[in-house]
Structures are given as C-alpha cells and as structure tokens.
Amino acid sequence: MEKSLPNSAKVVVIGGGVAGCSVAYHLAKFGWKDTILLERDQLTSGTTWHAAGLVGQLGATATITKLRKYSLNLYKELEIKTGLSTGLKQNGSVTVASSKARLQELLRQATAAQLFDVNVEVVDQKKIKELYPVINNEDLYGGVYIPNDGQADPVGVTNVLAKAAKMEGAQIFEKTPVKKILVKDGRIIGVETEFGKIDCEYVVLATGMWSRQIGEDIGVSIPLYPNEHFYIITEPINDLPKNLPVLRDYNNCLYLKEDAGKMLVGIFEPNAKNAFKDKGIVPDDFSFGEFPDDFDHFEPYLEKSFYRLPFLEKAGVRKFFSGPESFTPDTQYLLGETAEVKNLYTCCGFNSIGIVSSGGAGRVTAEWMINGYMTEDLYSLDIKRFQKFHSSKKFIMERVTETLGDLYGMHWPYKQHQTSRNQKLLPYHEELKNAGACFGQSGEYERPMWFALDNSKPEYEYSFNYQNWYPSVAHECKNTLENVGLYDLSPFSKYDLKGEKVYEELQRLCTANIKNEIGKCTYTHMLNEAGGIETDLTVICLDKNYYRIVSSAAV
Ligand SMILES: Cc1cc2nc3c(=O)[nH]c(=O)nc-3n(C[C@H](O)[C@H](O)[C@H](O)COP(=O)(O)OP(=O)(O)OC[C@H]3O[C@@H](n4cnc5c(N)ncnc54)[C@H](O)[C@@H]3O)c2cc1C
Image 1 (tube, rainbow, N blue to C red):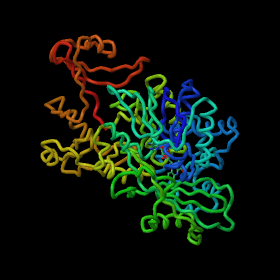
Image 2: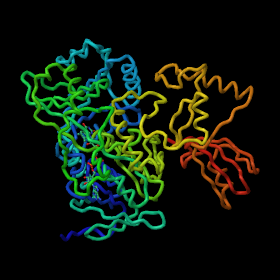
Image 3: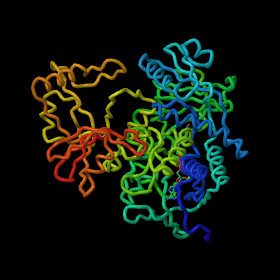
Image 4: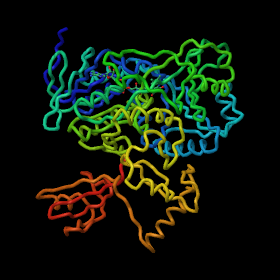
C-alpha cells in the first residue's frame, strides 16, 4: 500500500487513542503545527473503544483532579468547535462511603477539589437516597455528589479531539504502524514505518499498553503492563429511573452507570488478572479485542452490587466484557521526557481513567515539550520517578495485580505496596528485621521505615490522623541527638558530577553557598529555570570540580 507520508515533521505522536489525539491537538493549538500522528490500525482500536466512558472529576490527588476537570471542560468546548458529539451526558455522580475512614478520604479529596472550583457537595445518608432512589443506603456514612460529572462516548471524545487536531493543522495517518524509533547520540532523530522514514525532532509515545515493549526495543524503561478490566451490562430493566447519576462504591470496588434503561457494573478489584499472561507480550495485531468471560473472577463483586442495588439481582446479564488496560507501579500516569532518550516523551499509563484524564494530560504534555520543562507540579506523574527495574516483567506484572485495585482502594499516607517486594535486600536485612524494622520499598531496596518499640508489631496501622509509628521516630530522633545514629543512604539516588565548570554550575543552580572544600557537604535546594524549587539535596565535594549529589530516596 502506498501512502504519501511527509519525510519530516517536528513531532511524531505515535498512537491514535484518546491520549495521542489530545497531545496532537494541544501541540498544534499551541503553535507546533508540524505535528503528525501515526496510528497502527484505526483510531481507538487499542483500549479506548471499549471504555465505560465515566467522566468524573474527583481524583485521588489534587494534580489528577485538576487535569480531569480540564478534560471535561475541553470536551464540551470542542463539541462546539468541531460540530461533532462526544456523547457527554452530565447527569452527575454520587460516591458513597460505607466506612468512616472512606468518608474521611472523600472529604479530603473534596476539599482539594475546591481548589480547582470543582463543584462538590458533601451528602448524608438521606440525601444519597434522594439522589439515587434505588440504592440500599443502610450501611452508608455519607458521600459526595458532583452535579457536573457524567459519562461520554470514548470513541466520540477521540473523534472530536482528532478533528480538532486537524483543524489546528496537525496531520493524522491511520494504518501506519511505527516499526522503529530512531535515536542517535541519545536523541530522537526520526521514526521508521513500512511506508518510509520520517525525520523528526520529537516523538511522543501515546501507545497505551504497547508502550513498555516499544520502549524496551530502544533501551527505555516504561513501567506499565495491562490487566483485564471487567464490566457487565444488564438486560433492560423495567422502571429504572432515567438519568441516575453515576454511582461509585469504593468500599465494594464498584462503579455503576445507568445507560439507556440498562445498568453497567464495573469493578476495580484488589486481585487483578494480568492480560496476555502466558507470554507477557501485547500482540502487535491486537485491535478492537476482548477476552473470554471469567465469571468466577467477577462474581464476588456482582454479589456486592446486589447488596448496593438490590434490583440488580433480578436483572439478566446481556454482555460480559473484559478488555485490556495498562496500569503503572503506583496507579499514576507516565508523562514527560524519558531519562534515556532526549526528546522522547510519554503520555500513557492511565490506569483506567484515560478517557477523563487525556484532555488534561495532552495539554500538560504539549506545554512540557514546548517549554522544555513542566510548568506546574507534575512530579507525581513524571516518568523519571521510576528506574529500570520497574519495567522488568518480573516486577511490573506482579505489581499491577495490586495497583488496579488501588484505584478504588484507600489512599493512605505512607501506604506500602504488598506486591513485588524483596527485590533487593540490604546485606544486614535479617539483623534489621530482628531489631524490629518495619520495611518499606525505596529505590528497589527493602528499607527500614521505623523500628517497633517494646516488642510491638512492626506494622503500619494506616490512618489519616496520628500515626502508630510516631513514638518510634521520636525515640530515634532523641537517641541520635543524645547518643549516636547510623543512617544507610543506599536507596537514595546519587549523581557524580565531574568537569571544569561543575562548581560554578552548582553555585548557579543551588540556593546554598556550595562548600568547595574536599570532604565537606552542603544541604541545599536546587532550582529550575523559573527559580522554582526542584528538590532539596546534599552536595558533597569529593575533589576539585568533582561532586556527588545525594537526592531524596527514590520510589
Ligand atoms: C473495560 C474498560 C473500561 C474503562 N472505562 C473507563 C472510563 O469509564 N473512564 C475512563 O476515563 N477510562 C476508562 N477506561 C480506561 C481508558 O479506556 C484508557 O485509559 C484509555 O483508553 C487509554 O487511552 P490511550 O490512548 O492511552 O491508549 P489506547 O487507546 O490503547 O491507544 C494507543 C494506540 O496506540 C496504537 N499503537 C500501538 N503501537 C503502535 C505503533 N507501533 N505504531 C502506531 N500506533 C501504535 C494502538 O493501535 C492504539 O490505538 C476503561 C478501560 C477499560 C479496559
């Protein structure tokens, strides 16, 4: 098949799902018109086509809430601009809490959402029944109602973004798989397709669940892996109230949406199932694909849905759906430039909230590329937070069985993952254990977070309030002040800088006066181009113009 692809472009966006189309739109809108998007098959043929289409604004973190709110407004705005429909229906959402801790978390998230003018109402048990008359509310402590939330058609959203991208000057080519990303001297120089080579300055990987494999080909670590994600659609239900809000019941791992007289019931369970488990590889030709039913896996959660919405027990199941979606080691997206290749950006790893996230994620990706640095606090989403081991199959395939459930799990402060542990042990791990260490994972290491006192159990008792380990830390601080303490910095990231101008550059970048004396160390902030704080770290002078930077402990 012949195709007239350009020989060169400023940016090649790879992947025509909702994320890639959003990046292409924003780049072109912000002035980088010479942007082309290459899609292996058809737009939406990866994960996007089968999404449930929930568009809720409240995220686990303030950063994510901000991006989600932007997406919702963008989709409305682009409907007008393009004349196409996203199928957006703003029937609101109700999220309920059947434990006190859950209510506390919802209230915290609602407070953060107000920063971005998201209209969130805190509702009690009675009000929940008014908003959702068919709910069993007897065990509920309360919840939150977001009147402007809703649902959309994922294919409609993608088509709207694609048309808007073209209207801004970007070009989109379907049936054009990228065979190879071309890198020279650690920098992007182009891509190769079966229709020829395209020289380019930048590549954006918006390749969803394929991204880990594509990165691996060129030595770039992209830690994500797909799980099977399940929902069912019932037969039409008589007398089902119309325009019910979307219902989220995090304690029971459920989301429920009314759709044209039927109900869609989806789950985020704590014991997720890897997709493509046998080989650990996403096939190149997987398009508009789904997996066979696994009713045994789904059934416990279906039972829970019967408790919450008793009328479901009598409803027949019209469709059981299982499709792949990629998850990351910490249930946060992967954005920004990769550590390994200059001008290679990622916009992937959406952990099942890609439809509602992509508007915002596309905007910040475009801004990041055009400015050369992030223009708002996106550290929690920056792909550079991860290291090589995070994308090894051994680590990521096990970890994502946990992180799918974390989407609806409690987002406790200091929460430690249970999976993919014991990757790297300190040589005296057993001694630490015998001394009562409670371990956490940091930079691949099992690291003692604190030591239990008085033979108590070295285990976190998670809470948003007083932490059970505060007395241990008080004890350590006092002991270090009055006696002596030994701190192992193995899990911390270290960078050695050598060269003629190292001292001069450090003085330019750091707020403290860097000690230029062998063996001396300086604790300091390091700044970015805008004078904002990038991080705090320790700079040690090892020799003349030879410094070691020890930055904070890695993920
Ligand atoms: C069952 C289910 C329900 C969901 N429900 C919701 C929901 O209610 N709300 C929500 O916000 N999210 C939901 N999601 C998540 C959402 O669907 C995804 O997060 C989102 O679609 C990811 O979009 P993407 O563009 O990153 O990936 P994709 O849609 O997979 O796009 C990646 C594209 O890259 C292309 N590609 C890959 N390799 C190449 C190559 N070498 N060359 C060129 N192109 C390539 C693929 O063909 C594909 O089209 C759901 C997911 C599932 C599985």
